[in-house]
Length: 411
Image (cartoon, rainbow, N blue to C red; front, side, top):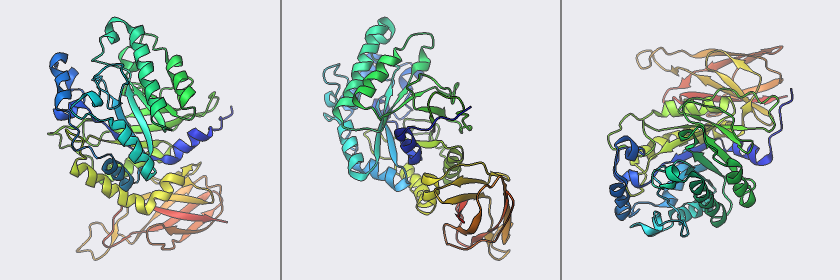
């Protein structure tokens, strides 16, 4: 069966490769995660008073965008409204539970989009479909769905061109008609090339939903290769993941992922052609947590060296030993090699080796040269029929990039 060709806007989304997810809302003031209203059984009459102290005094949209850019991210997905029902944008009279009516007295999404456009980052909007604030969600679902549609219409009309919309919450009511066709038609009317995502949650990773969906999701789990044979349209894939154990900031959540983990997760996503959306949770009034900023900054240093392979490489037929794999560019192959040692004195390094052999099968291209992308060192290799064996030299002392990438030039 044939594999459909990706429409340009979907292919462009795949090329972005690496994005930054941002969960920020009233819940951030409490510092115990984004689900605190539900998980800690708070009363809405008390919870909604958080808007009176939501000053957003530390929210610097440009600083947020530059954090993403420094990390090597090409796009940001920001929570315009999370399950608590509070909107960071001007809801234009739909209700007054929004940032312009809070202590912030600002349209924070306008600031975010302007900063993205200034620095060449593609803005995406997260928007909840589950709503704990709006009583119609439980009492008059049709009225609620119209409210949701009008909310999304505002986002599509008032902020210029956006990269896409990322919905989350349909899993909360599995047996109802969410009128997705009407919602997505509204998006296509104003933003015909917006990527439409509707998160299928932890229990249905990679599930394909409505025909208008452009990308499947893998929440908190590495993506598997997609079988697109016979699909009516080409779908992208995206993995989203927390930087610790919460989406919104947790002041006592110290279980942060390591730079190595994030780098390897990014590579694992690109191995199967998926994007990687790594989340941060800004502080109570919108500042970027210093540890999260610097952690992503370390990933950005890796991207400065190897980002070309992440952005340009696509899955190919090659199969490597262990975790090693190959991506194909326009006129090159990118060879990803794991678990290399360092070259140095035995009293300095642990299990030091001068090189290791990385072998791959199903290589269809004829290779003329291979070199490390970090120092341009030429690597010895043997290619016999469709088998490639590369003499992957160890890191020079003073260097350890977790995953090392070589570029192979083709004949």
